Length: 233
Image (cartoon, rainbow, N blue to C red; front, side, top):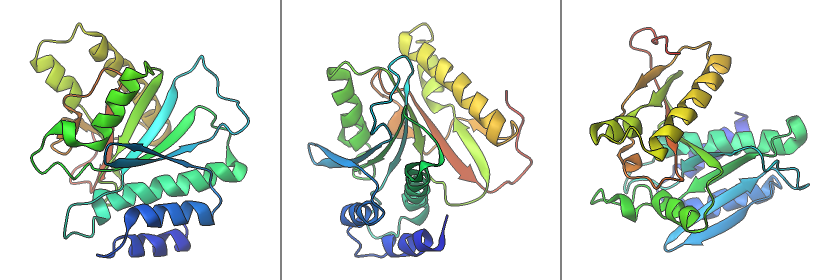
């Protein structure tokens, strides 16, 4: 991440920062095309890389998502500013012509920390998932990035799968999609981390527990290594 983005990250964590306006200004200043989609009281930044209509309908759209809101009276640095700025850096990198990623999309979501009652239906990504389901959009796979500001060890969450297993729903379509998505995620990790990462049910992604069928989600997080990362294939 370049020094300018690091400076912006510091400003983004300031107590009185209007996070929506700040992201909007950052994208505009770097001339990265985006659109804002509103669902109820949530606003989503959507960044596409198919300006020339080059998206291949035969392949899944890979959606990288991170929430940009934060808990009240916190800087929200690790949760979740770090992931937001990592994706903003990636958006700038890809937009600069470094790679053709026509089937890739970045979404910055709102209202993930708003549900103090822990009601999943109050969260922004739940509303997004329901909207996609109503529109019969089911060719997306979502990778959710959270708590990515500390350490260098990736965590691949198993919480959604474990929940379905506990409810004896291993023969459902959504479980099959989760297993397929896990295989895809593991293949990526084999490439970028030499197969070293943690894989277990996290306590951070409780909001993934009742996701609509079109929202197959894995949480990707980072932590400091307390022990050597386990080998998972």
